[in-house]
Length: 112
Length: 122
Image 1 (cartoon, rainbow over the protein chains, first blue to last red):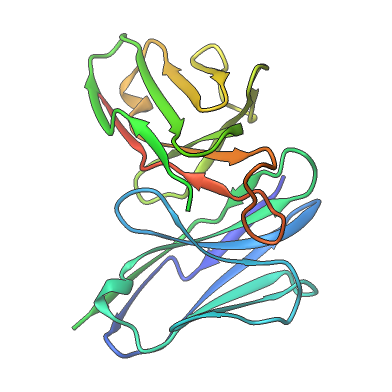
Image 2: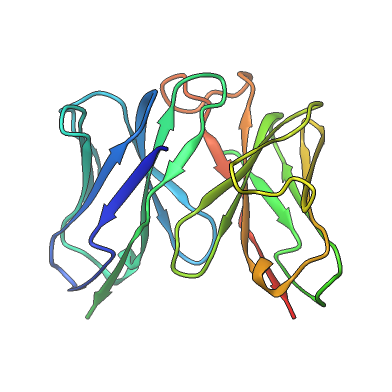
């Protein structure tokens, strides 16, 4: 059974701190790893990582995938209160189904 | 990005009744739609995958007779929770994926998520 695990489960930081969120996976027919941000409603897409060792960056957020060790990290620098959310990673498998298997999520709270 | 809507956004019903949730892709044709369930403080769990014009594929442990899925057109899928019970109370989210007419990232047909439907069964 495919498994995606995130750590920590929750995190409270002060505005301006840098955080690193972890995602490990055990997935058959792995294709890509995706990161999402979920506030009150549906997840919004952040990154998709397919190749190992290539950092993807968007503003203060960046992410990288290690396919040998089967994990990914999401970094957020200079955190702001608007970064408070649940961050989900999900594995995407190959094949026509292309299913997403979501991790447990990390609940991030950024305080003033 | 593509827009996916869900209706209703929240619903409260009595135990034993059935509830229908609609998922629509507003500006693209979705050959595949996915239904997820999310319990409080937990992650999204895939319930089923539906392809337009064919029967849905349910994940292990999801009762197909309880959660009826219909994907009758390329822009609409419905999830009906039959004989709902309090333990069915959850946040139900759909996602829609195009069949190739609308590409997302790196030739991957991205899943676009709806805003979710919060179901409370009394």
